[in-house]
Amino acid sequence: MKKQKNKESLSLRFLYGTLIGRLILRLLTARWVSRLVGAFLDSRLSLPLIRRFVKKNGIDLSEYYSDDFRCFNDCFTRKIKEDLRPIDETPCALIAPCDGLLSAYEITPDARFTVKGREYTVESLLNDRELAEKYFGGVCLVFRLCVNHYHRYVYVDNASKGDNVFIKGRLHTVRPIALEKTPVFKENCREYTVMETENFGAVTQIEVGALLVGKIKNHHRLATVKRGEEKGMFLYGGSTVILLLEKGSAVMREELFTATEGGEETSVRMGERLGTKEKG
View 1: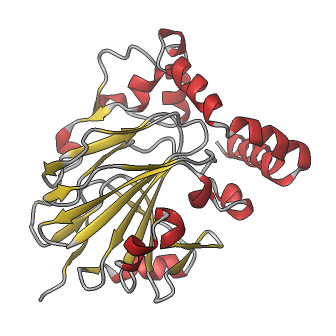
View 2 (view 1 turned 30 degrees about the vertical axis):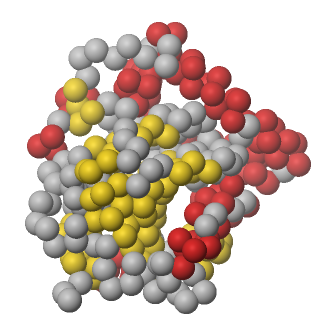
């Protein structure tokens, strides 16, 4: 496992740290390449990839509905058995929308925060100044999904859901080496929606695509949705979910901020309580 990680690290450093690598990367991050790879992974030709993927990532298929994979992406987007991801149904509980490695930030008045050593603004994520201003003084939660994570995500509360807004971009990996070299969340394609929630005000959820992810697949457009209801899924690749919360909407677990300040990500599971509704 350590040798494999070292090989991956060397490959990524070549792609992001050398001139030739960056030229190759420019091709790899084009959307048509991701669409081509996506078409292959949706076909029966990709079935031989499943066994190696499952073994390499230590995935226990007995935890999933896995009787009839017709292609690699069926395996990648496999559905987990419900009792293994219980949803905290307490109305005041703010839950994790997905499995992932979590970083938590307070959104300062100038709306800047840091992800793996780079600065980002809420405005650059949303490409919308007016919407970004709603979250000044609030909280930004960044969930980084690796390939071995469960790649479906849910709604964090009962809500009236706005339409999906898609922002085109170039697709990059969300590995730390990429985050050091390029403003990944600013350049990757992403899709967001504003949800008027029952308990936490206006929550914006952003799904960010990554290298060789051909599609962010959200199930609904304008809709009334329920806490824990499946919102969508990512097709192949590591990906990211971001939640933006308004000021005073929730009190987060303090250790989430402490870990982030120390350069650590916190492993969380979908449905887990991350904070509680601010008492009004």
